[in-house]
Image (tube, rainbow, N blue to C red; front, side, top):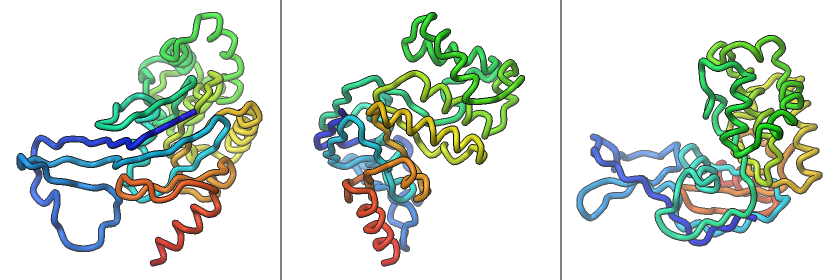
Length: 247
């Protein structure tokens, strides 16, 4: 269960940049910039968000660049703390935000699996149990014994996705890295998601791809300038978003 009540997340900007606000024209991004009373500047990443995401939901988060999608996921993961409001997350969380986040560039893929397992709080025997499954899913061959810095973006995504989905999380958070795999791996990933969904795992995924959203999600969450614009049935949210973009 994920529950947010009137959550606001703000980032102060200590060095005011020329032209940071007030430029005319239509913005192609969804972020919000505000002036403080003291003359400083702050970025409002999330503004008064109230939502409930129940166990087993698969939610696609959509919106402009800068609308607050990644900030929302990082808030749920506990990386950010709300500036105001209340964020409650009940369950074990696993994240796939960046293909290199938390990875040691000089360690091998094999060694990074152990590192990731320890960071997620697994015991040695638990890591040993999931290790063959991770190696089989990412299918890196001899590259599993090569340094992580030698991996391509697709190989990094394979390893990160395999780790994130093999630790049996209650809640899986994915941020715009899912489309980096090739066709064969995407089919494996689809099967993995189906297995997770059958176990009532909760997935919250940021993606600009409607096909990915429809393949893996049943709910949509539309953010605009850090505010919740719409949350509900995925098709209804996507239709409303497309109509908004046309206007």
